[in-house]
Image 1 (cartoon, rainbow, N blue to C red):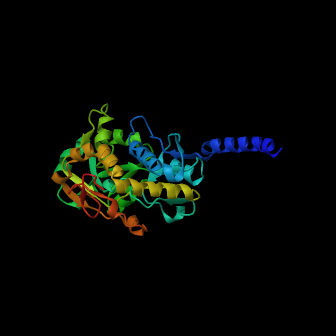
Image 2: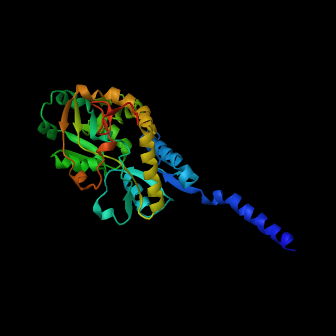
Image 3: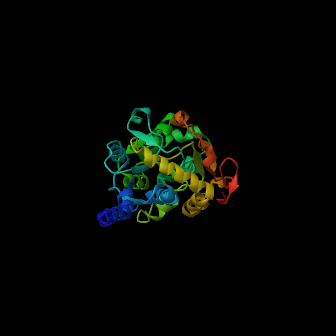
Length: 304
């Protein structure tokens, strides 16, 4: 009686164990591009997937899904409201007023390369920018930046004139048509953006100056996603340690850095007042494009 009575129980238990991994799959959400031409999200999606792959053995299976396209302001609101499961997006340091709803992974996901900026310049102001020799001369140029971007605060802190624009794609049209003078981009971003906006035939890249202000991007999510935060941080550190993060980074951004020719430009340094408040030391996980090295120890070519 016991033998026959236990058979259905073990069969049921076996079925439960077999289906448990399906029940335990953790869903993560990544941000989508704002437009078909917007390639900025590709690296962050690939990096998020890399961290999840690195932690599969210790944290289990996962499913990575895309959130609908949205601008930066709407994206922050979606994360604050917990609109999508484990929604991770990349952003600069968030103000203290958002600390109750948001939390970040303490790791600079772009390795600090956004600290170096080169600019799209309007055709009308191209020659004036080429002759520029002092930082205060930049104050006569009108910068265009996205609404809610940390760059706005940094540039205004340095005394620059800035026009905030809601639509990312509109910024390229404004600088091409001379409605703004400069649209400065990360040294890792500009080449791809130039290639995806070939239809704007007067879109012009300055070849003479670069800006530098300390700037990092972090993975953000809702503060309640504690388990997911720990998993992503673990995955980032594992990927950095074995060199796979550096390999992905170089594959994605090295062509853009070669195009930027940072060592041939006049470099003007600005302060980032908001970065002083960050509670992590990110410098061990950065890339120096002028020396071609990773981290404060100066490791080359993505070697762990």
